[in-house]
Image (tube, rainbow, N blue to C red; front, side, top):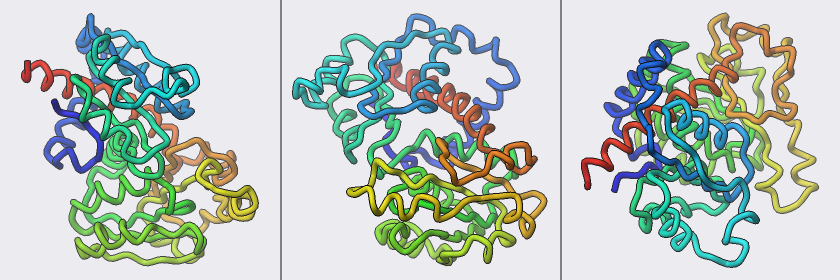
Length: 308
């Protein structure tokens, strides 16, 4: 049974196909209004979420399907000690496809090994977030028209930022990509991502602690939140949380066609005064996420039917 756990589970050709379907959904929404009639999405969120959970639910509803599930671990049998494996075996009896978020890395993979229906990883700890990456890719394609020959700056929490890890992996497959890593020393990109992706694929990258020094070189600036929930102590979080704040003055050196992205939620890292700047694309990302999740649900359900 085909699931999506890591963005690299999809080939570049499949990503192109999903983008084509998403663009067709944008242009012809009525055409897809009953595509998932009588199908059910199980939304299993063991960790809080606003955008991802509601995006999946909106995607299924707009395809004519329905949604069941829970929005926190305490409202599921996980609070009683039930394993992920048993949870998904049970849910497989009720639904046609699962979207799952879990604080533990690897939990969605365990789910996919035990479910009899497709499982979509909606975020697992600091590891992967493939459908956010699909939202990011559609945004980049619609804003830049290409995935090739782009310089992408990742700023903020690069250590725990699963969206950063997933997007770097996805973009590593395209030509002419350059990566700029902007973070405090304590939140640098993990060595396994640098070694297994950037170095292995000979992708040029630079590391810096200064956003101002590199912002003029960027085609895309991917801002991230310093995540309180990933820290072991409050002191470190408070010390690092406002390291980077994007304000209008910092954009004076930026290109006119810079694409500013953020997986959201934001705290202080992007000033609200930038929201009306034409280079701000983070709320476009939110909408693009819904369309790409619609395309993905259609793809996985179609492949599941072919397996029966």
